Image (cartoon, rainbow, N blue to C red; front, top):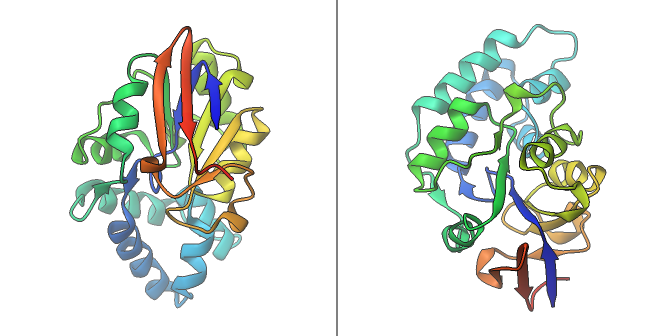
Length: 216
């Protein structure tokens, strides 16, 4: 099967970067502090801003200091972080045209994780600390399209979580789910691949062609 688009947009954690070891250690610290179930926190937190997850589990509490503390921990720890299989080749091809990263991580953390896994920093990086509403709101993806000068309908998004898929779909973009974090039935996307080894991206004409035998 083949898709065409003018721009390719990527989520970061779970999509380009496997940061699970660091993320689980960070949330484990917070769950133990508040005697909360780590499993439930991890299931909810994927694809969402840190402070949004904290507010969900501690409604009404002022969690800004703890969110900042967790972000500092994650910024300082990149051990165990690796690139998702096949992602480097896809990003290499994406660099030939319009591409962006839209992430629920703040800018400094995003830059450090991309650098730690060998990815180039895109000209358009939309981190959670530079928008008002994080995923599943479409604001981040709409901002990326605007900065690229591309219509949202001409963008293809790669995401690994349901909030991310919902964000891209609400922006009017085609979302392809990666089964790196959740099974296809959880993602809620008609398009799903195991990882980037299941696709081939080619620069052509005014955009890209995306080939795969694994889209569902």
